[in-house]
Length: 258
Image (tube, rainbow, N blue to C red; front, side):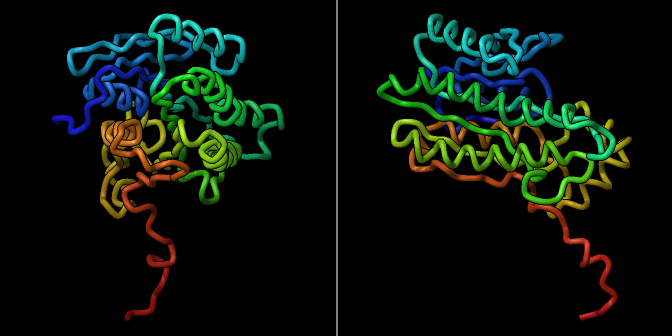
C-alpha cells in the first residue's frame, strides 16, 4: 500500500516492535520513511524490513529503569534525535483475580503502565530539547474501557495508560504531542491461542461491526498518522481502532420484535 505520509529523516522507537501488532507498526513506519529502532527482551527470529529499510533491534527489559535510560541515551548518541515513541510492549496471561496473588497482578500493571511511563519519561528528555519536539503514542486497549474478566489487571493498566497520556499531553504541550490508540481485537500470529482455529477466528470477527479482526498494518497506519505533521493539532486524544467496538449482548438476547 503506497504511503501518503512522509516520515523521511525521522527516528522512531517501537517497544515490543518485533512481532504481532508491534511488527505491523514497525513496518508501517519503515514504509513511511522513518528510521525505526525496536526493543524487547528477546531478539526476533528475523529482522523486520519494509520500504527498503530494516529496523534495528536492541535488547532491553522495559521493566528495568536503568536499562531503559541507557537505551535512550545510546539512541540519542547514535541518531542525535528521537521523533516518535510508540509504547506498544505489553500483554497478559489469562488469570482470574482470585487465582493469582497481588504480586502477579502487579507485574502485569508494571509491564503495561509503569514501563510505558518509564520509556516516555526517557523519550521526553530527548524530545524536549528538539525544536521539532516529538510524538508519543500509547497503545491502549478496549480492555481499559469495559470490564475485563480474566485480564482485570491488564484492563486497569490500560485505563491508567490512557489517562496518563492525556495528562502528559497537557504537561508536555506544545512541543510534544501524546495520544493513545485504543485497540480492539487484532489478528496476529498468536490469535489461535485466544480464538482457536480459522473457524473460531472468523466467528469472533463476526462479533465486530466491521465483520473481522484488525490487521496489524491497520494499527501501523494509525501510528503513522499520529506521528506525522498531519496530526499536528492532535494531542491528548484517544483514537478508537476497534472496528466499531463490540455488538451489545442485549441485542442478541432480546426477544421483542420491532
